[in-house]
Image (cartoon, rainbow, N blue to C red; front, top):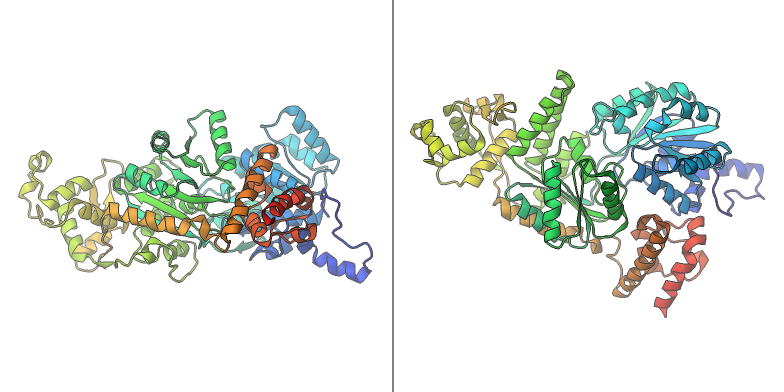
Length: 632
């Protein structure tokens, strides 16, 4: 058994030998209830825990919010000895350690944010067996000095969090993670678990091969996040679209992703100027400023973090109500990981992406410029193709997303395509007009010029190249420029047109487009009502769906909601006093349970969701005072 800092017994001193054998099998359930305050495991958790308790290595792929941490925290306490947890971010490590310590678990982290004296004292307690779970970054773990010291200790389990970082095919490959492949030789016979929410089949095989070899067990819990409403909108006026969307979520925590540092600063300033509590985050800022902004986001309600992808990995804030991408992400895996930071508490949330033709060209350029060999570039282009197919999906967007991860699902009813009754139509005749304009102009001009030709414009550029004399000039009159832009965007996303990523974004006819010209292929087209109307409609639907009242609080009466507000105020005071995020004290679900059940005794309080023995002793009296006052 691991060391649990509480006056509690996980076994009965009066039990018989037969009872003891039975209790050993059930120890994981006792730890779950007594330490973490949960009445049962979520789907998939028990199987992974049993595999580790049996001494086997495993890779666990579970959606964000499915409870990955418990999959190593419970066996860590059941096995005893020392568990090493490899984690990529200092802030994530500290928050998890704080949560474990409040639950009565002897957890610690040694990292560069602490002074040397503090780290030395923590190591002294690790060496004397007074620490059950030790969090380390891969850089600190894989030093010769640390590995030599750990080899002298009774290590019982090694957990690698955010394991996609070890794979060259993952969306966030980190070179320092690659050295972790030495662990199985350095600590033979010790069970290891790798955990991630983001890994397609190729990435899964790569992770398992690097960490475990051929004998690992792989658990794939599924990728669906049904509480998150998915939406994609054509990028028109991105600033106004961003304001419209974020304004509908006033007072809620959210993340707005931007492609560049400059745009990140610009967007944060735009939101601030419109009365929204927004903070920037990108690698070009001073570290103290980045850390301060992240700390505010994690600890305060209603903060909007405007960030590049430098922000996000391991962010464990459960009440993020929305994620907005103002630019196209890099791949389906990256997008899944990024929008998955919303709704970790299981309550309704919203993911909206804005994208346009310029995004596609930019992403193609990034792939060509990043190097890594021809195989790497080809794989990344295929991944981008999959994301574009998601953006232009003809039906349920969630079906397209999950199919990428080899998962089948019926239409979800919770994406913009399921909620929008506008059907896809046969747009082959429109594709023929667009392809003819591309062909007639020499397959070297960008979308803006092709639209001008189709609409019959008579500007200087059209006259300069004599394109006003082409048969295709004016062939698309009667349809506005926004509609032709949408048609061209869908032709590119569908692989009918190719973009010249090394030049100036010129369009060329791809193999599928040539098949249309030969009458061998059709083009399913989904008309945009108008980009602006569609964006506002998505925002309205998102607001209705993502309202927190539709989550944990939906079954509470007005009287209960009044009590809930008082409980949240107490939680805020306690969390600030301990310098931890509010959810580390109690989750929103726990507070909602308190507001509804209104416990007035220690025994009743122990039955509240998320109340283990340590939190029962630390907090029950204070929260029951508030409950009692409201009952009177």
